[in-house]
Image 1 (tube, helix red, strand yellow):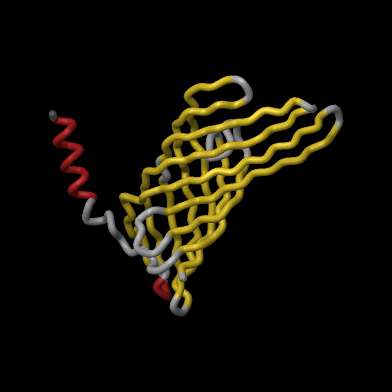
Image 2: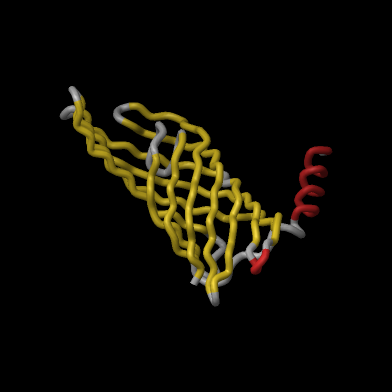
Length: 185
């Protein structure tokens, strides 16, 4: 009971910061995701894609792609994957303002991921599938430019989910990272 009261008190105390300034309009940009587990990979690597934040919808979307074609020595590897992420930032707090109306925000979100891929390793081909939850925690630096804004963001993203790769399946988890740039129109 004490933990519940403490959690509710902390939630109400933080709620004043939960809706700090966020750029208006549509946010569109590029994103790189890497680490232990992401929408596409279950064992490291970096993925690139698009990030989209529609106006009026409180969800940040990512559409991700990965690809690798490596031939060297005795190895011949081809890897291709696609995935999506969707995150709701339930806490966004302004931590600093700078000259020219630029500002730095701290954010915490909750979301999910789904990904699939194909891997060919020396003639043996397999597929992978992963889905689960994620908790992005990061910083966002926003610089207003005329009627628009440019946002540079970075986050650590603990993830937990279910994955099937090759012929094995199981619970997977890890901490990934994100780095991206969004233009707000």
